[in-house]
Image 1 (spheres, rainbow, N blue to C red):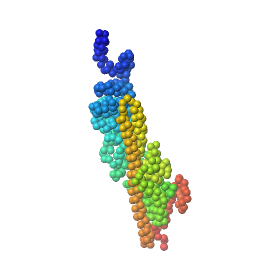
Image 2 (cartoon, rainbow, N blue to C red):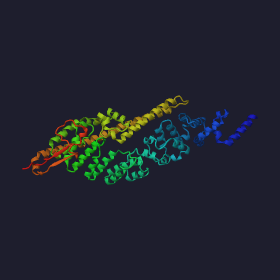
Image 3 (cartoon, rainbow, N blue to C red):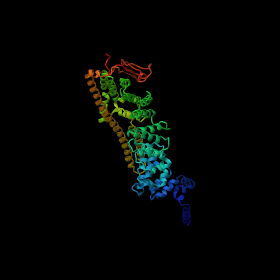
Image 4 (tube, rainbow, N blue to C red):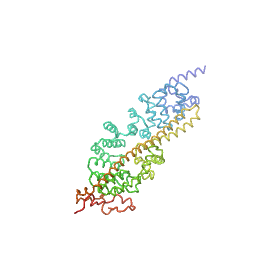
Length: 529
């Protein structure tokens, strides 16, 4: 009779307090620890709501929720398969989001986030699971910049514009529709890093389309913007290019001259200055610059086009020995480099590439940091944004694969069979290897592109050589009609105290370079009668 009365009282209490007693741990009740159990219920209110939505129907599912209440996410993840594999709940949007959350909380952040963002109808996910995600992941987390997914606008309402931009900015918008790119820019806060990156891509986009005027306007605004991650020298040299493209040669030269010798873009700026002088009809000034660019010690730093420019400028002042000397030096300077590119175009798995990837994983890489490896790699490899992203993603996945392996090892001690964690470990490791393979493939693509460019330069060098032969062959006829008073005098613009003649090739200090002077007083002209 007493037992019946006790059960009746218990039933009344359960009916009165409903959810609270349903969530209490049975052992806590028997031991008189109801206050602790009540406190536990308050702490896990969101989980209690989720449990009500899921309505667990087995002991294994109840065990899972107990681990979730305790915030023991590792045990909850190990319990997941036993509790929900093959169930209707697992196939729902809420089930997928919760499983992804467990991966995220156990260190498989990229796996978890990509699984979440891959859900086709995210608006169907229960609000309790969305709350769990929002509490544990903000828009500043680096994982957003690694996730390879198609962004669903729903997630912007959950995680914010910062998360969206980090995902979508992995893609280049340089060749995208201008209107679409402009709309994307409007979504970003003023003076934010994301907006400045997109504006930079708009500058490049407009430049490619030939709208240099608008590109210059956007660039002028960008150069004054706050929180701008774009390299200042890169913007300066781009301004010079836009002016050059529109025929404002003197103005372009002023921008090129702003690039200091400490900059990674100095050699590039010098080469483009020389082309500007050629278009101005001042080959003597171009020749002075190319004397620096073709300095033998810059092997691996300067591209083959600088030697084409050197030969061309020498031809224009009828310095035929100079043309031949420059052409002859190409084999010494670039023979090894071109052979290395040929090798990379067939097999990119070379030591120099491995060294480059290791260096990129630690941060930005300069040509000086690469050392001798620079001549064994595509010229633009160290600055290629696609390659840098692939290296970072591989590094991220490698760390995640180590975590996956540790989880697999610990899962073996858990009560149930955990074969799926070996599969998960293998999947993450395979993806890391594929990402690394994509990096090597990118280097291979860059090598092939540079080889093709080099072949075109070599063809243009042959044209210079043929024209030189023709000039020499018809020298008397040419001189007969030349302007006797014509003189080409000029320099790089350096002050007189810095100007240097180059009558010999003695060793030169780096700070003396770019101060060469050329005075061609009788170039391509006949002597006085």
